[in-house]
Amino acid sequence: MENRVIQGFSEYLGEDKFLDLVNIPEGKFIMGTSHSQEGYANEKPSQLVSISSFYLGKFPITQRQWQAVAKLPRINVSLDADISHFKNEVAPVDNVSWADAIEFCDRLRILTGKNYRLPSEAEWEYACLGGKSTRYYFGNKISSDFANYDGRLQHDSEAFVKYREKTTPVGIFPPNDFGLYDMHGNVWEWCADPWHENYRGRPTNGSVWELGGDAQYRVLRGGSWKDDAWECRAANRRKDPIVNWHNYYGFRIALSTS
Image 1 (cartoon, rainbow, N blue to C red):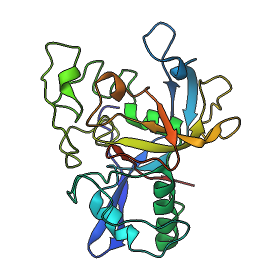
Image 2 (tube, helix red, strand yellow):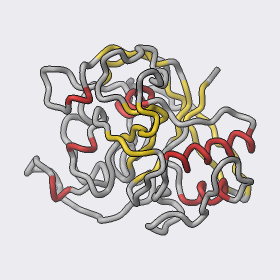
Image 3 (spheres, rainbow, N blue to C red):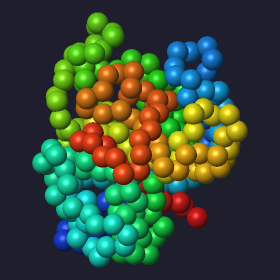
Image 4 (tube, rainbow, N blue to C red):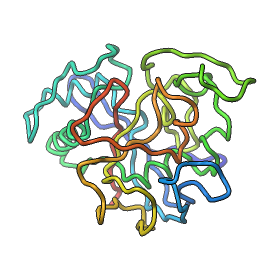
């Protein structure tokens, strides 16, 4: 990924508000945790997955962006423009359920005429790693200099330890090689996929895995400001019902290139 030129575009949301997206190149990667590594059973068996090029939000959706879209006409559910627990217009929106995130995408589609959506779980993990095959996009170790998480729970005694106790403005930590920020920590990010207990039978084309899943539970990725380093690994997954929300749940949006 050396010397890759980051490509993307900005979507105008009105009132001097924009949403930045980055082009994620097509490629292949090993999704999940291999049997030779530590990890949870739901991250296995690992498999080779092919990803088509797509766009992904450069940052998680911010409160400023959320407010712009929340003011648009309702499609299926109401959105509270002031939903976040931690008030900062350049920090990620929090307290968001999966149903809220879908409503955001629906309204954005009407506004722009583009098919905005949540990323598939495979797209998210591929984009997070940015071409790497490590636990995090910056290597196999993490520190509070690189992500917003609970550094007090850090297992590596040499790492810089800090616990910020809340979300932080997007973009203050180094990006990955695809030009994406805040993929580890800050807020958990909703994906489109229903929950599956493991990867047996998973499609290898990077699409949303609908067949056989529990549609009342959806996948979240990336960890948050209140989680330890292990929870922030690229391969880590968690589930929650589509209506649940917490002050550590947010999302970022995706857009197919074709």
